[in-house]
Amino acid sequence: MSSTPDVVTSYALAPQRTVTADGVTFAYRELGPRGGVPVVFFVHLAATLDNWDPRIVNPVAAGRHVITFDNRGVGGSTGKVPGTVEEMAADAHTFLRALGHEQVDVFAFSLGGMVAQDLVVAHPELVRRLVLTGTGPRGGRTWTRSPGRRSTTSPGPR
Image (tube, rainbow, N blue to C red; front, side, top):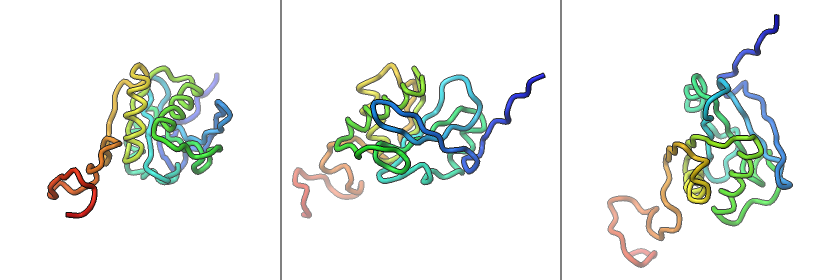
């Protein structure tokens, strides 16, 4: 009789893995039960796998397959950091296809949200659901201003 391994639902216990695609070795972690559409976490600027808070990841992994990854040139992933958000989205697509996923749900934070938006534009068939947190559209000159400040066409102080 064969036994199935226990499902890891603690981010602290999820081993770091790698997959290589298009000359880049991507570092990632997987946890939670396999099967169904995975939830892929897109991290903020300059963050690595270790920046995800287990208080966010673990509850999701209790019932869903979760994947986190380091962007190209960051943390455990090789290569040069991309110069544009579009390039980051292309890398995310390369990574997800290397893992064999045809459809994913995305939970994205900050810069990760901008990357996820470009991923959806370039590959709408890949992303089934998108949750954007602490992010905004890229390209707006005034989007980082506080809601109480009046918007102007000039990026400088008034």
